[in-house]
Amino acid sequence: MTESPNPHIIDPDTLTGEMRPIRPAVLALGSNLGERHANLQGAVSSLADTPEVHVVAVSSVYETEPVDAPEGSKKFLNAVMLADTTLSVATLLDRAKAVEDAYGRERGEHHAPRTLDVDLIVVGDRVSDSAELTLPHPRAHERAFVLVPWQELDDQAEISGKGKLSDLLAGLDTGGVIRRDDLLLEFS
Image (cartoon, rainbow, N blue to C red; front, side, top):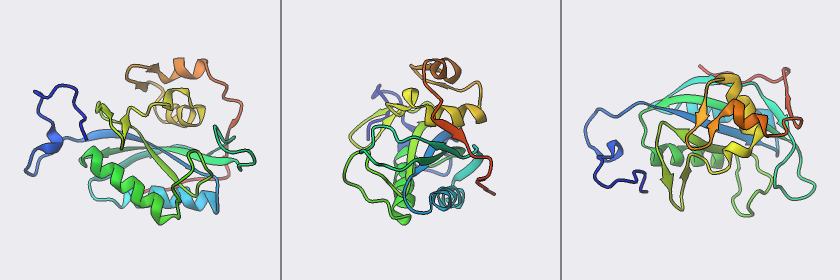
């Protein structure tokens, strides 16, 4: 995975040794099949238990209308998690996929209903455009179900090359993003 546009810049992910940079990461969580709340809680707990991942904050849970999903898809529960990590981006992506798999995620049809979706939105200032991963997430800036919970956690956040969350949200319909105060996600 090539993450640096300049081949002459040393990529800390390829260095050996004990010291690795700490990067803030934003992960979006979603579920619209099975025990949706339990799936989200399981993702938060699994990621919090991951060595070299320190969960900083987890947003409220939001119920949202499915976007670009097949007709008849059920509503999603969504949340955003902020974490600090020393994992490489590739390792963090592998962990996210493993957590999805542990909760019965079936891969196949694009935008199909799912038990669990764990998307890397941004990881520090890393830029990636590969078959495995695009960072920042290529559609996060147009998804209220990501931006609303993210802004709850960090009202000064921005997506590199796209702008501040508040400005991005001003151009989106947020009516289908409903905060569920009866559902909480815990982390330690």
